[in-house]
Image (cartoon, rainbow, N blue to C red; front, side, top):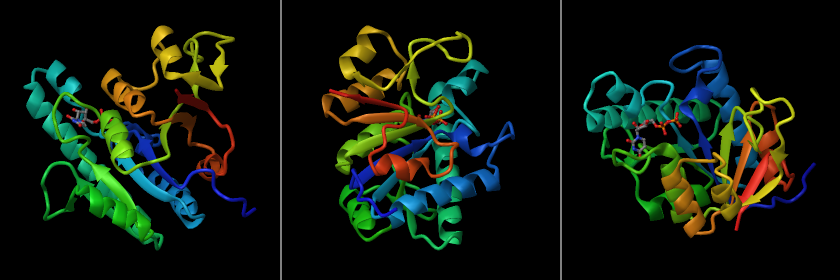
Length: 239
Ligand code: UDP
């Protein structure tokens, strides 16, 4: 169908683990290709799409620190991991005929562009998929914070967080039979009920700027476009 989009510009956050497929490390080309197809479908339908990709399939600073490494160095390795994933996604998008630009929060400009807000918006207006790498560019943050920050900066109408679970539940649905999924929540309900949606810093950023979030499972083909057309898939969090 060609129903109009409910959102003009969105920021989609994918975890690094989403790229692994059934592997336990790295990137599965089939999986990243399928995700790229989804993003291209949304972009072709008229959405301006910014992407943030995590690095947890390669390195996480906290995990490296638990193994004895300096935390800041570990986080820098984690940020570089997100650049690797972003480059892989850029390649997958381009191989499928889309245009994409990786923009990094840390300067690594033989490999990709530096993040410059006005340039990022221009890319998206021209139909290029902007891929924001290296989170916020500082240690002790996550790519969830990067997604919230870039979402706010580029004026996204919605932050989409793809997870393995199809929304926010009152208990872990894998452990608690009969756990209830919320269709909608306010920011205050998330805080008062201690629900896990994003890390605290990321959530605070989104809440302070009234950026609505939708938490959903992206494993079903076509789901991204359906959300952009206004279907209530997953859990919506807003003020
Ligand atoms: N990271 C960081 N600052 C940021 C974003 C990421 O230091 O602004 C580091 C941090 O070590 C993090 C790792 O990069 O663990 C990978 O990002 P994240 O854990 O958010 O990836 P995901 O869980 O989404 O795959």
